[in-house]
Each structure stands twice: as structure tokens, then as C-alpha cells.
Image (cartoon, rainbow, N blue to C red; front, side, top):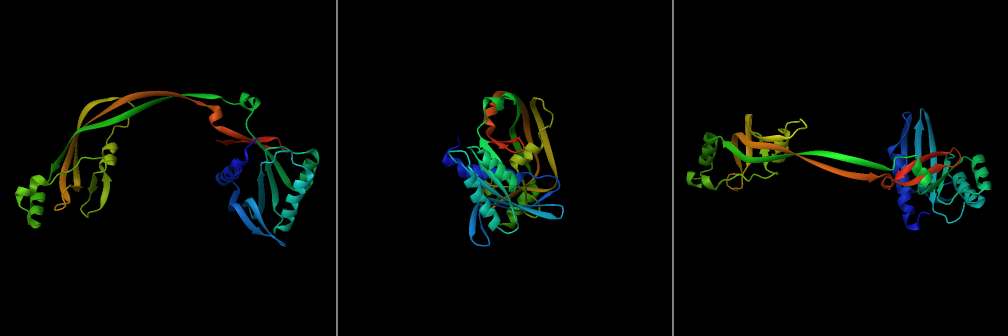
Length: 278
């Protein structure tokens, strides 16, 4: 039995499942959760209101999700049918519960366009037909960057100091902090990458370990990096030199099938089953 506290979560799960699925000929029109809809005689709060179109025709479905403690009898479906009758457009009804249905309720639903579903936790019989565990081995290749050096465009940088009337003796105080978030700029002072993205883009794509390898990347367009100085926020560079290596780490773990399937949703009329993750 699903606890009362989980009822709203189950409504949301079913809503999310409807939202993410649909046949190739189905177009979603409206999908609302905990929706107030005006009927001919009263306003009704419905768990899920779903309108979709197949071809040129639009259909409406009202979904009721309820965790009753006993099997659903004819009276509860009769109340649900009264709500459907009061709503415009003659929507279909879809009733979801954890408790099951009495025989009279099943017969009434067939006569009145109400689809009945039973939501329950998976049993051993359900699990017997499914994969119960996944053994996963992951090969993780991690790049490492060391000995990073920037080649300055000395002529441009000296000219910039002169333009800003900063003595050359202050040049040693202008530094670049080699962090992952170091920003690269173009000649229009527009950021186009960071150090992390830039270095990762140069990692060889082959799934192999890589011994320490020296790389020099020259820039064919004006390129600048930010500095730690408020006086000279940008420094022009010609190239960057660094050493790259890749190491392999192997991780093994197991995923249990029960970690994926939290509940079974069964159409009691058509005997088909859908699973909902935890």
C-alpha cells in the first residue's frame, strides 16, 4: 500500500510520465496538475487534466489518483462519473488507485468510458520477468594539465602600459592567475572561453592513457587573458604551452533493478503494465 504522504508525489509522477510521452500522431494541447475546471453546475478540482489531439480531433481526459484503503466500489466511480458529466466536452475518465476494484465497479467503468488502473509496488512475480541487477564497469580517463606558460605579446603589452601611463617598473605586478575559471577574450573584449574549456578541448579523444606530453598552442587571432591587476585587466598573449597527461581509473559498481522500479501501474481492463521509477 502506498502511504498517504506519497499520494501527491504519485500524482506528480503520473503527470510527468504523461508529459514526457506520446505517440507519433499525438499532440499535447493542455496538461495541468491539481487543476480547477469549471463545470456546468460547479467548479471541480481534478488531479490531472489532459487534452491532446490526434489528427484533427481533440480529446480530454480527467485523471483521478487516490490511495484508498479498501477496494473501489460502485459509489466512488459513480461520484467520479458525476464530475465527468458536469465537465464540458465529455472527457474520458482515468481512475488510479492502490486498492483494486470490486466487480460491480469494473462493469460500471466499462459502460461509462472510465479507464481503471491499479498502482502497486512490484512483487517477486514482477521482478522475475525483469533484470534484477546491472554490473557496471566504468573506465574513466582523467586529463591532467601542468607546467602552464603563457607567451606574452610583449610589444602590445608594453604599448598598453604606455597608453595607460603605467611605468614599466609596475609590469612585474601584473599577473595571470592560472585557474579553471581564467577567462579568454577576443579583440572586441568579448569572452569566448575559459581555461577549463580551452584545455579540455585540446585533450586527445582516443580512449587511451597518455604519458606527459608537451603541447604549444599558438593563437592566429588576437587573444587576451584576464589579469589580477585592476590597472591592466587584460594581457595579450601569443601562445600557451602546457604538459598534458591522461590516467585511467576503473570503477565497478552494481545497480539493483529494484532501485529503478518504484511502482507498477496496471490497466486492469487491458492487462498492460507500465513501471514508474522511484
